[in-house]
Image (cartoon, rainbow over all chains, first blue to last red; front, side, top):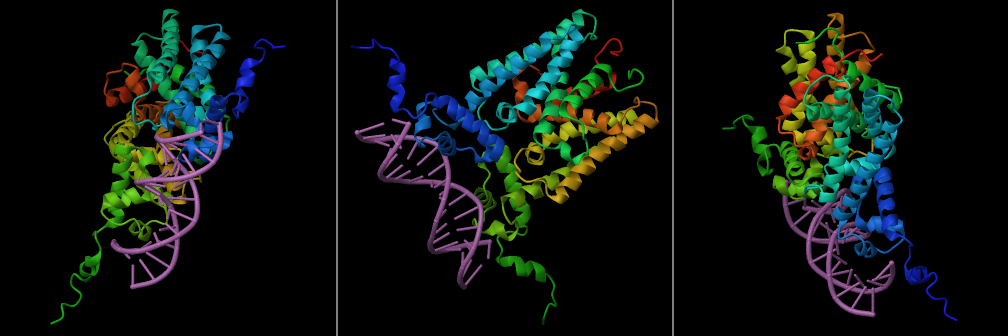
Length: 213
Length: 213
DNA sequence: CCTACCGATCGGTAGG
DNA sequence: CCTACCGATCGGTAGG
């Protein structure tokens, strides 16, 4: 009366502690970074929080760097998706460009641990190739938005990469200041989404009353 | 034939390893952060690099957090001085505002270790009072520059703190991206000073061809 | 995925 | 500022 392999994979896994330890380790890492800070992150503590012994993570990640690389890759993918999704709702190139920036900031604020791993000074080595690719994709979304706005005559001429980098600096700065709690000393009481919209709009419009040149 | 206290303080210090261990510990910390990254920073390693045993630093700093607070305070002071100095050379409010932003970026790039300690997510507690004050002073320089430019009719009306925060986001973002080596994946070959000048100018001028509203 | 074990480093203190 | 010492944690591996 063999069941012919039904639920075989599940049965095979029954002597494992988790159905998906890899996922549990990633989640534990994110929670640890959020709650205790980066300095508290060790493979052993991650294992502890995932409910396994400290040797178990090595089945999934060669070392701490590999675990962090996986977190970063996941972060870049999610951020890219978030930007694309928010942009898709907007009717004009300029509005899509601004939505892209706001989405960047909101992603960072809502996923601070991911954001820190993605951009923190935590890797001595360059990004893993897959991370670098995902990071590059994110930047290309921005460059494309700039190009589209230029073609529509909504953004002035200029090297698209330079314009994109300026947008990136602005939203990355706001996101970083917020995530690192630096804005608490300035007496700003606005929500971060309002700040992001306002600042993005200011970059588009400029601060000067009259042309500078 | 008593020498009446001449060089007494020097003599008293002769059984100390350093003339100024506090300074040596700060320098060792900065070098360690620059070369090995934040994760490598421990009081013991700092002591080692300063050429003393690992118990010596406790004569000057209660713990690691206190050492980092001292580094941060020094950083804020130096950054404030740098901004003031570079602004003093400029003849108009708008040019002073831009010089302030460029100085921020150049300080960060030239003092990456200080910058990381000042703004990194490394403190679980809020900044020490003296650090918070120094940080506040830096921000006030920016707010004052905005106010001055508004009074001169060079920058449009608007809440000065909000405008200042926008400027801060931009330069903080560029500085962070550069310090954390994120720009290496975008194929930008310009020097950071050129980028800072270009981006600051773009914020002043705006990217939009026509008013957005 | 676990137990058991390794060498190394760390923060911190006593006591001089 | 040093020596000597404490308990704790860490990365990593053997071996099942």
